[in-house]
Length: 325
Image (cartoon, rainbow, N blue to C red; front, top):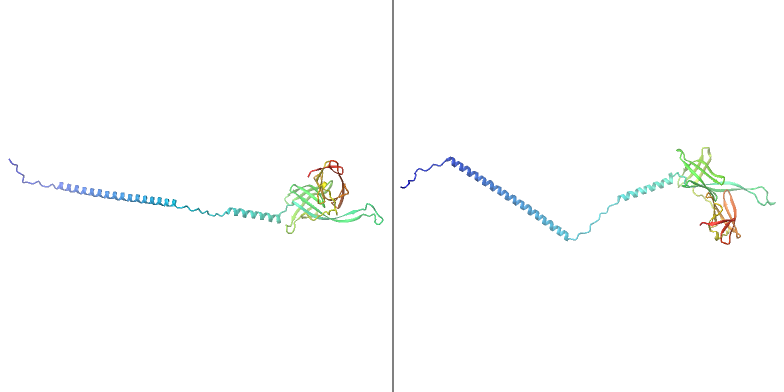
């Protein structure tokens, strides 16, 4: 038997149609979103590739530049000249210090160290040893001018020089707050030459001349004004002086604390006990006499007998002399 086809067609379900439409729309949206995401990923990948390519190109360019720089010769570096301002400052400070010291020394230095002098005028009497009928027995009076100098050294030693005789003694400076005090004691044997306590002041400068004034509280009558410097003094040598080369040099008396120095310019220096120094001029008389002359308060003459023994030793007035220089 044959089956008969049903003439009645099934009707479409509207609810299912709607569901299919929504599903189809959602699928299309998902496909679109996926496509956009893929496009975006492609663009991002492309951008990253371009950046990497650009970096690679830049690195390549830099490498090429470095290669070119290395291949080119490197020119010598130019050194910058830097001014030494520190040296200039030090030089300026040094010059300023030197100028200050010079100005202070010329105008404001009140130190008494050094030599000061004045000229003393005095008189002395002379009596003839052998009176004659043509002269009287009265002594003759003579006037003389003598340089007197005072040297103050850094070891607190004062040297007083009268003519050609110098005597040493100690001195000390005391600062009392008002005016300084000079305490000094210089003796020639037992005779005082320069002793006492003195106030003092230094005035003037190197252009007008410096002066040292020594005074006491008793008044200006005791003031002593000294000029800075050595002063002028010359001990006149003997005319046609005769010298002996064998006695040149410095000799020490083996018995006493004495030193004799004979120079080839006609001067003899006598040193006594490291305190007294006397400058003489001398000449040889005959074959055994040394005639000397020096000045203290007046002109003085003195003679010495000298000889050499068989062994060549040198004697003065019977005392053996030892060569020390």
